[in-house]
Amino acid sequence: MQDLTRSQKARIAISSFKTMANALALRGYFRPSGKMGRSLADCLIALSPEIYGSMNDARVVELKGLEYVIDRLPRGIEQATRLILTEEEPFGETTFEKIIPPKRRRSCYRISENEICFVISRGLSEIYDILTHITFLNIEAKKIGSHMVDDAGNVTFEWKDLEEAVLKLDQLDGRELEKAIWNLSLILGRSYQETRQSFEHFEKNRKAGNSNSLFHLVYHLGTRIANEMKSRDNYLIVYLTPSLMNIIAQQRYGRNWADDIKAKLQALGLHQRPLHIISANMHSVVNLVYGPAAARQCTVGTGTVPDDPLYDFINCIREDSETVLAFAREHGLCELPDRSGTHIDCQIIDTAQLAGVPLHPDVKIDFNREETSAPVLLVIDYAFGAQAFEAMDCLLNPLSEEPMRRMNVESISIMGKAGILPGKKGDIMLATAHVIEGSSDNYMFENDLDRSDFDPDMAVFTGPMITVLGTSLQNRDMLQRFQTSWNTVGLEMEGGHYQRAISAAIIKGHIEKDVKVRYAYYASDNPLDSGQTLAAGEMGVDGIRPTYMVTKVILEKIFPG
Image 1 (spheres, rainbow, N blue to C red):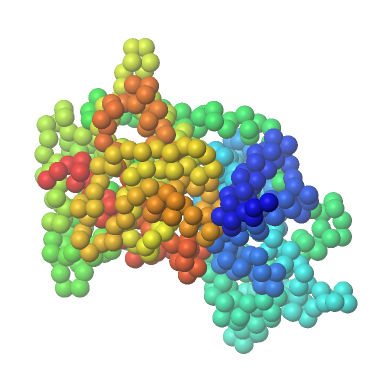
Image 2 (tube, rainbow, N blue to C red; image 1 turned 180 degrees about the horizontal axis):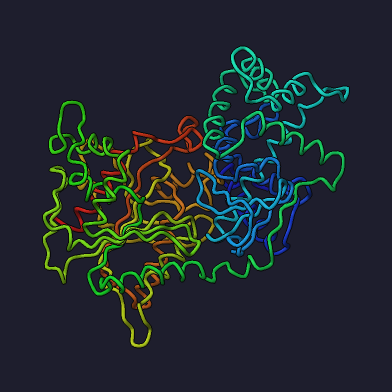
């Protein structure tokens, strides 16, 4: 029998993880330390995702992976022994504490000290994401648990020291704190400096109310595993309610979200005007359009706003968002916070009210249009994975079926962050096609954006993009295979699903077939470089130029100067 290549083994591992996750959703529960949980763990271990670094090394705890996962799970997840995944429930009428993780927009509720409920409103991608994180967390918890006792079965000195540190955490300082971190590093199998860096990461989040300390996290993960070894009754258990699967692909959340947008457009009298949809963050369009007029006094060094380079100016006004928003609300901006549970906020900008509003001299936009033909910008926040299909599909549906009243959609622009394969953080990718991982679906389109639209000194890569199942379900061998066989330049989670909805809307006659489509991504990471994965941290100031350059190019395409 011919041996499988490593990329083939990786694809099988992803397919198996997806199949088991779907089966668990139908079964309704599983124990991460039980048979089905171990099968999920085996898939993740076989895949060995780049983002989880040293997960497969039993000697060390993967600290960067822990930071990444804990930032995307609710505070106190390490103490939970019952996790519930369910559809929307009327939690707003209860006294349960609502928790939203700092790096993932999802609603979670603490039912008790040991029970947390996840409200799933973003489809299968969200289920896969949560199950992947829980599986990784359990793998690392078992490593920690193995370091609690010595060969004779006695609790180690380091673990006793950890117990003391947890009890008097706020009293630790100076030499005593350094000693506690040193002992913790022995439990984790990491150097003092690595442990210190992670400690500081968690302390920053702890003080912001987003997570517990690294001492607390390690102690409770290890204690849970010790309790599980005493009795099967102590196992962590994950429930997926029967009603959860009933809402998958039913588009209830997306339909309510789209209906809110259309109702607001009609209430503002904008529903018949040319509409340009932009999937982006909630700051870049507003800052570019309104920032210069709103922040006239902002300076960089000795310069003044009109003379400062665009990206220096943007960096200057980032902390002055309320001033910019206040001005924008008086000049055509209508904010539409999500009420549906999709976690996709929106902004509507009536460009008829922008005539005469001064722009930065580096931005070549002409807003002068007759009021009846002035375009309307609909900026929608980032969707999550397959949720993008539901959101865009519902949004592009007509205002009414009988008689059919369509919105006048002239362009759809998707601006996102993605992992890059041939370049580095901060580079830009222009998609020529989307290949959806794990299926035969691939979508070609004519991208209205071109390399010549961007600054000559900006690195821009053009080619197909992979729409992946999840950021945590990738490894080097598979990505290199995509790069060599498909000539892909990057990976992301939404583009293929957006294009599937756009193609469907064209076929159904809901939008014109010549609608302008634009896809541009800036590189938030390079998963083939261990120092540039998502677990390595945020881009910070380095993300300003690519983010705002893409935004600028999209706006200049919509409003050629």
